[in-house]
Image 1: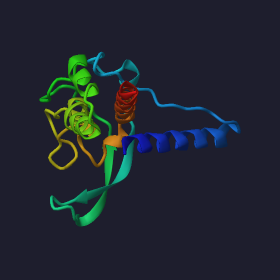
Image 2 (image 1 turned 90 degrees about the vertical axis):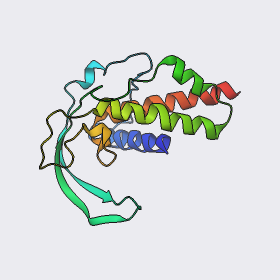
Image 3 (image 1 turned 30 degrees about the horizontal axis):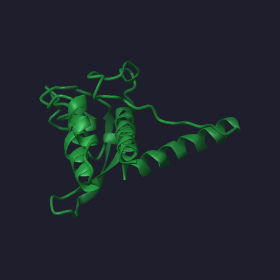
Length: 171
């Protein structure tokens, strides 16, 4: 589902630019190659949006929480590597790329690098605000609000790149 999510986001960005400039654009999201670059890309350092978002909550059994949503003011925060597993290495990702089965490939990618990078970027906030339930880590580590951090999109663009490489290796 990440590929469709990225595609729709790129289409939305292109539509906005077409409305603004009157011409077609070919916007593609950049990827962060975290298997080789074990730090956040410099261009993300100051890219920390602040906005109030409607956050939908779910119970552990998959039902909407009560209330099902709330408006939460957020500023993107990151605590890279704080109380998190290290970023995946090329060796680890190559082991996943070498999987022959789609099922095994997707399970290993999702349960390994996908979640690891989310948690590494978000990290743990050493001084959380006790009145804010979304302040114990950075936004990337919180499923409901992770897309607010542009790092989310760069991470998923990299997962998409890895998936494309895996497909090419099957040929």
